[in-house]
Image (cartoon, rainbow, N blue to C red):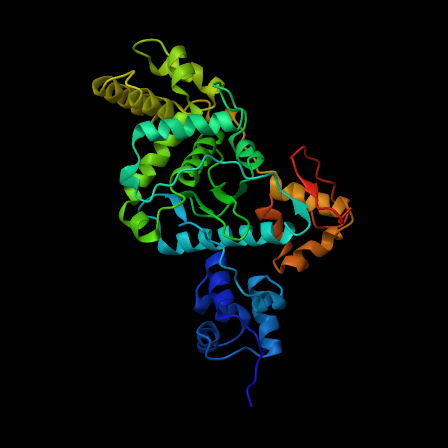
Length: 384
């Protein structure tokens, strides 16, 4: 007679190992079971009994019922990482798992709230080699026009993405070498952007968000095997898009005098909310400085600033996502759920939901204040 909890999903165990960044051996020690048992559960050769499942759930801080939920086929496009090529496979797996959790949260809440309509420029490239710099400039310009952003500095890149129906998550991951990733969701047809908050630099975070937006717009239809073979070129294209989106040719070039110095770019940094390094790359892309001038600027920047940090880096607070946070707040305020019951609803810990939805510290604890936003989101009819 078969023993164990019928319906246990081995893929959930693999996912939570990735999301927690722990190994089977570490989990076995925490849960008080043998490594062999973990391996059998993970490979579908055996199902844990009820008490073992409860211990397992406590060890990884999820609800036991979470292990009984199937993992939906969320990805409608390849997951594209804004990353250092040397980043560990385990680090990518961690961020990919939490990226998937953000899609589950959005899908769960989407039964009760209406998110903004999806409004992103349509591009149907199947091969990155089809994408020219001119095409990227047009896509970035169309994005600004579609979102009515004008040609000046963008006040908040994350808010612009969310107002267009994208879902953005920003959380500390412990993975400093991967700044973010993005993909389209098959369940609700929305793009999802996941940003690392490990480097508290508002200028770089804006560029990372714009970079992921470039992937979302340009690379939606690129297949996984083509993406893998062209990763470097696709990263370059997303970089180029970010520069074109943040620094439009018409207006940015008009504000930069001939032969700009580092001090010139530092003076423009607070206005455009873009790093000196990004402005240097944009100037070169627009042909406003030649290779010799660009090299000289890089040398001077390295000599004066050193490393990757720049003056004024601490003057801009990183932009915070609002959409998932507001969805939860509206459900609570509308009486759809008691606030403390929401983590149980999705099966994750209060801390996970809090971090993925950018909620205040201790939001699910008794007595925490309300979340107030102006995001364009509303409860579905019949939920009021």
